Image (tube, rainbow, N blue to C red; front, side):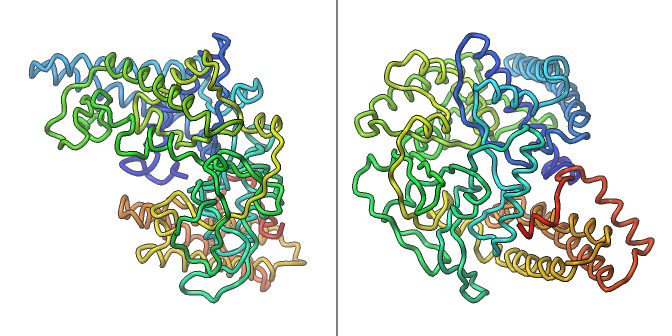
Length: 525
């Protein structure tokens, strides 16, 4: 959650940027294709916290103000570039201005200041399939207790029911992280038995998830688990055959590394093309980007002026290349499924031309005789899935394990999380049988703060030494709130009453509309 936690460089502007560069253009693209009779058949995951923020009362006002600021600052760019005779850059400033004005018009007039109802409509019309994630995008494999995992899953279901009117069948596991049943421990705890992630998500009614392919190969990966047994996979084709995880009813689809490397991860991926908009070089104070990649290894000084038409042409070329490449994989894939997941914000934010690439890929696939896009539930229903596979622990992080989030830089965070879950459970246990509504109210707030504390974003940023101050501020804020709330709850459990100071403090939590349906009983499910 970023609303209410600052604006720039870390905070609400992240959300506004993503909306202007990804979510509204994505809606435009999906409705445009639908009007032409082309079903996109995309699978799109929405985190519960993103759904809540896009529906937050403050979002529409803040987003409109953001777009107006961008329009005004872009006018300044245009005037400045004209004053120094940089007319190509001045023209690009006009191009940026047109973009922001279009987004503003579509948001206000076409989408009526809302986002989620339109993705819901596309889902109901079978154009897309929506997946969700655990509540605040926690790395479930490292969450210390199964009770806390259940909180994130129950909150996810409640939130998606609220925004979609139904609960998705698919659950995207944050960071593609998985842990099987077995012995678990942190470096600072004794080993203890845990349920497998597939058991926990299956018990909540989720039918499938997506995992890295190395979890079914014998490649070694470093983990913090005592048990790390691999599966016996002999043929490359098996990577394209979805399978039940162990003895559960949860289906795993496996991320394809060939398409992943071509589109994003590899050294020769599409976004490195010389004609695409460079992500890093910006003009201030507007923050607009006016230069192309030119050479991905060159410094910021040696970047040529961006040419939008040329860049969009390249997106079409790359879309055709991808479809041909996938078609050539058919001999290996057979009747299987190529699962190619990417961060949604790759398309439009990190890779400006990514949505054009995606649209062209959909159009070309629609005409192809050998390649088709399919929604995951449709594939599962149409296929006779017989395979069962035992998977090892891992993620799509560095080295395939969990070191990205659990390392010397972040160990203090995990100690806080571990102690917090124990303290919260002890307080909930002590409250059983009591009918004091104030206790339940305080515990609801405490459970919500625990979920915010456990977002994988904080340990990722700290572990990568990126935006560390912001991440540490968020950890400290949620932890300190949680400690204070538990102190208040314990006082009430022991027969005390709310002081005026406590009442004033609790009023601040009434204004947090994200997960306003959080319930302490989620911890006990």
